[in-house]
Length: 150
Image 1 (tube, rainbow, N blue to C red):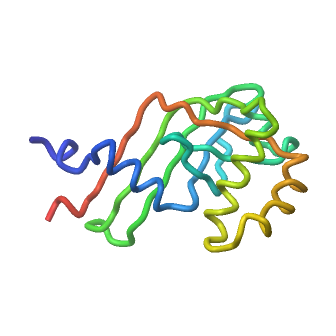
Image 2: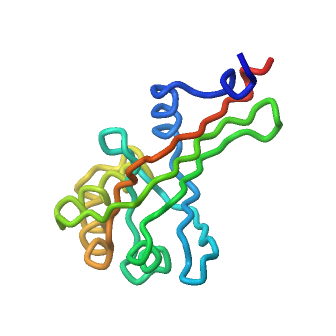
């Protein structure tokens, strides 16, 4: 077995890793072709990465023009501890406003564990008026867990 195959995570491990992370690096493509890279809070909805952003943000403008994205979640400080998941795909806009708020609630819950929904809802409803939500449709998944090299 080659080293790449040894360190790759299974689908279940990828899902668990993404569920355990609160933030990811989201790359979109600027109008001039350069990458636009930002840190985003995210959630998983039926195994798919979802996020939301203000409709006037650079990433929203980029996605309206070109929906291709890369999403990276990585952890570890030393080489032998590195674990990560890199998703390539497209960010599909969520059209239904109730679902946009649902994405917002999923993310708010992850950002503030233990806070009751009735305290989160006013924030989500207020900021949700100016936000768009997206589902990342995966085209390719690359993963690594260097702890397996020991």
